[in-house]
Length: 502
Image: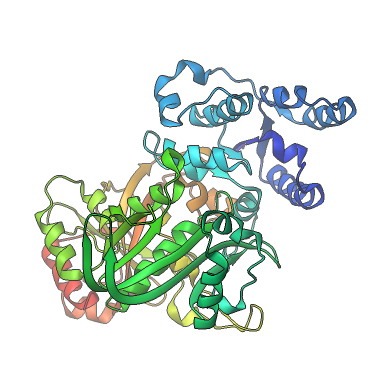
C-alpha cells in the first residue's frame, strides 16, 4: 500500500553547492523512501530551472538526472489563487515562479511532502500555516527527511549543546551577517568571551555551527526611544541565529530559554532585533509564543518582551475574553487556560513512546563534548513545543482541551499538553500529512494505527511534579490504572492540579 508521495526540489537533484555531501545523503534518503513505499516525483516546472542553464553539457547531464524520476501530473495553477499569492508575498522572478509551483502542489495535496534546502520555500510554508494547519511540518530538509523516514527513528533528532562563548570560533560563518550589521561586533564578542557568557549551539557539521543562542541574566532598565522600562529580573537573548533551513532549532531554543526563565523565577525574557520585514521568520516565531513588540531602541532595533511573571500571567488569562483557549495557551506559554470551558483528559501512553515525546530528567547525561567543554542536552525532546500523539481511542477532543499524559510503565502523570487539532479515521498517507515533522513514529509504527486511529496535535505546555497511581486513587481522581483516554471532571482536575503545579 502506497503511504504517500514525495516532491523533490530541483536544486536537491542538481546539488550544485556541495555535490558529494548532498548526493550521499540523497542516495541514502531515496533508498529509504523506496523501501517505505513512497513515490518520488519532480515537478514539470523544475525543467524550467534547467533550461536557463547556459552550459549545454551540464544541462544535458542534469536533464538526464531529472528524467530518472517520476514527473508530477499537476492540475493546479497558483497564479489563479489570490489568497495563496497574498500570503506568500508573491514575486514574479523565474526562480520564485518555480518555487511557488512546487509549494502549491503540496498546498493542494497533490503530494504528501516536499523536500527542499531552499530557505525561501521554508519561510513561505510557515506563512501558509495561517490558512492550512500544520503545513510547514510537511516541508523537509534532506536531514529532516532522513530522520523522519528511517525505520528506526532516533529518540533525539537534534543534539543541542550548552556551552560558553569563549569556546566558539569568531571566524565561523554563522557570525558573518552579525559582523556586517554590527560594526562593533569583534570588540563585543571579545568582551563576552572574557565573561564566558553561556550559550546554546547546534552543530551543522563537525566544524560549523548551524544555530546559536547567546543569553545573559540581568537586572537593569530597557531604554527605548519613547519610554524606559523599569528594572526587572530579566533574561536577555543577546544573539539568536538559525542557519539550518527548516529545522525546528528556533523552536527548541525558544522553548529552552522560556523554561529556563520559568524555573529560575525570572520575570521577563526579551531580545532586540533589526527587522527583516514581512519575511522575518524570527519575529513570526517569537510572536507565536507571546513576545510582544514594545518599541525601538536608539539603534533602531525592535525590542520584544515576553512576560513570565506568574501572578500577572494568571490574571491576564482569567480576564481574557477575546482570544481562543488555544490562543491563550500559546501566547502565555508555558502557562495555559484550564478553566471549566475546556475538557481535561487522562492519556495513557506506553513507555517507548513516552521516552520519544518526553525524555525524563534522569535520562539527561552531561558529556564533555565540544572543544574541550560543554554539556549535551540529552533530553532536548522535552523542549520541542509542538508534538503529535496517535491513539486508537474512539473519542472526540476539541481544540484547547487539556491532556494529562499518564506513563503506563511508571504509573504516573507528569506532563501536560494543550490540544491544537484532533483528527479521526485517517489513512496512512493522511496521518503523514497531519503529523509531518512532529512525528516520533517510524513508518512501521504508523502501520499499527491504520485502522480506527486518532491523531492529536498538541502543545507541550508543562513538565510537572509526577503524581503516582496510588496518589491518584487515594485522592479519588481515578479508580484504577487507565486503559484508554478518559475524560476527567473539572473538580477532579483541580485536585490534581493542586498537587502537580506546586
